[in-house]
Image (cartoon, rainbow, N blue to C red; front, top):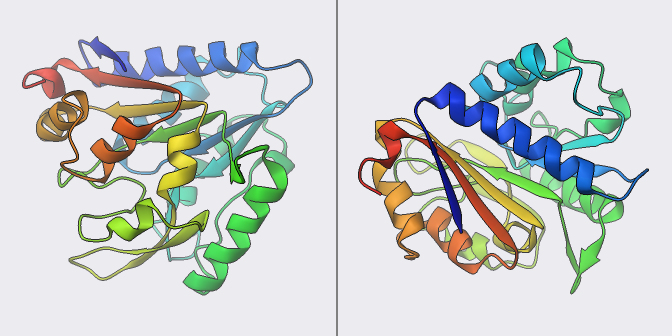
Length: 237
């Protein structure tokens, strides 16, 4: 596990974008670079910086974007992870439409989890029957959840399904979520954790505990794990 601590959230985001571009350049020429994106306010900043400062350096024709999770709402809803990514990044860069593979949050959750999981299996290479992303970009909640896998829903960490339905414990909102096994098998598992509210979950991940789903997948990842964070989050780590 490699932890990159930067002074601010913007600096951490810029460093992560540079790292993504390095990983994309290292992929075989002509191949697609398969990236699963997370939602939330932290990657929103990263997406804005990507569009405004790194657009010309990015080989968009090779970048294929998937989503780690999606709230079960239409793409026009303010809670949509796809909608947030579209507003901050996709509408501002020249990425081919076919390279954007969104979860249809407006569909029936169980049906969509199955459909999207099958699509991912058809588009990605596999190891041991599990689809392998080049990069999975994760955040984590203050409670240690990641990819809409919340504490108390640990069965989603080991299910053979590629995507499944998670439920927010407070609002009961359903979400289509990438499950534990494909997260663990990602060639590059990268966390973006910034702000003082992430101090405890960051410490749990670095300490290699099973304190929550985020720490669980980080400890069991089969390949590279990197954390991009800022000084506010790293004070307790």
